[in-house]
Amino acid sequence: MPLGQAHDVASRIEAAIRAEIGAEIEVETHIEPLYPDLIPGAELSDDRVAAYAAVLKEAAEEHGVSDIHNVRVREIDEGVFVAFHCRFPPTLAAAEVHRRADAVERAARIAFPDIRRIVSHPEPIRE
Image 1 (tube, rainbow, N blue to C red):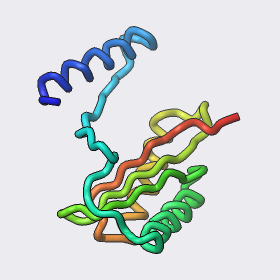
Image 2: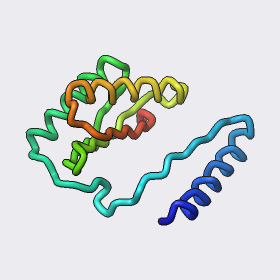
Image 3: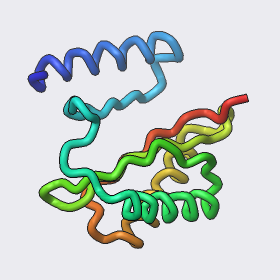
Image 4: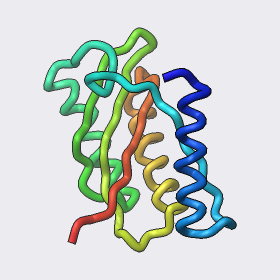
């Protein structure tokens, strides 16, 4: 999708969120390219993916993050791309969720300097 069109869609989403929860709320979206298999690049061996997942899970325990799952790791031209889902209490403030998820991402980057990009997807803990 061209940037202009993607930005228009994102702006409509932001406006709908502000209309729902309040005009004083700051809403920022982040536009990502759409990839048919979510992450471009080459698949890594199961052992390597497991190593990345283990570091994410260890860091999650240290920073109050639950249920690291759907860990995807791909080799891209610039290095390694990591994406993962994680869970937080549904009442936890978004700022705190962001702080904790960032801490997990930083720990993974320290353990694996080949990580070029890492993306977390926070979700509420299910009842």
